[in-house]
Image (cartoon, rainbow, N blue to C red; front, side, top):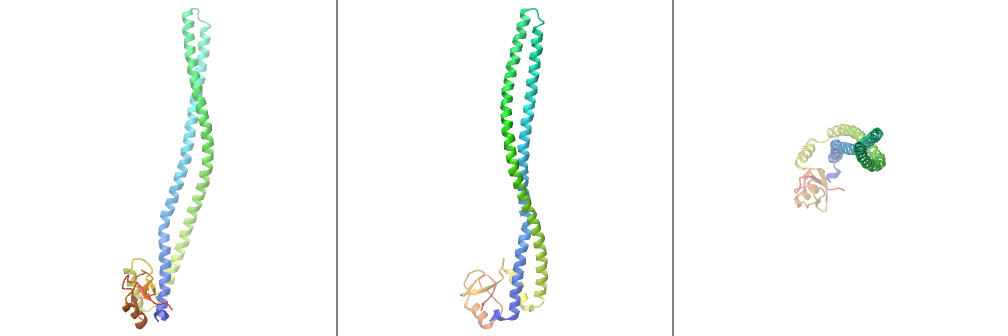
Length: 238
């Protein structure tokens, strides 16, 4: 049986190493995208913190501005009241009285606006504090994931290099005809496995039934045989 053939066993060993290497290379090549995806998430989380901080600062600026306006109006009211003490004509006194009343109305409106801003500011501070705490924790976890992926990349690169050396060593001990057939199969078949056992006259690579000629070639002639459906090398296990 072909599976008992020493040269074919070496080819199966090569195939196993080849598949592991290809799997690791795929994982390694996907790492930059995975890391980039994590970095995008970190940027979004940091932007959320920045946005909350900016909103908080905007409310603080608005609060300070209103406070200054209220203080300015208070000073104007005091000055106008002092002027009232100096005027002698009723017309001038009444004019100042009307101006003072207008300033008081403005001050009252500004104070109402200031109270609303202060309430918003308190809510914003609490929200920002909670959000920043949660987001910072999330960012730490994302940064840990990014670090793990970077370390994984180093490990994969080392393992791929090791497998390359093993594949070269294994390849050097295999019959040229078998290697040629294996290399041709890898060009024809789009994805592994490139060697698949037959199970109930079906290729386990494509799960399709093979012809009797293929079965005969494997069992009787015991030569390198390809699935007549997908092109994979097929054999019977013990």
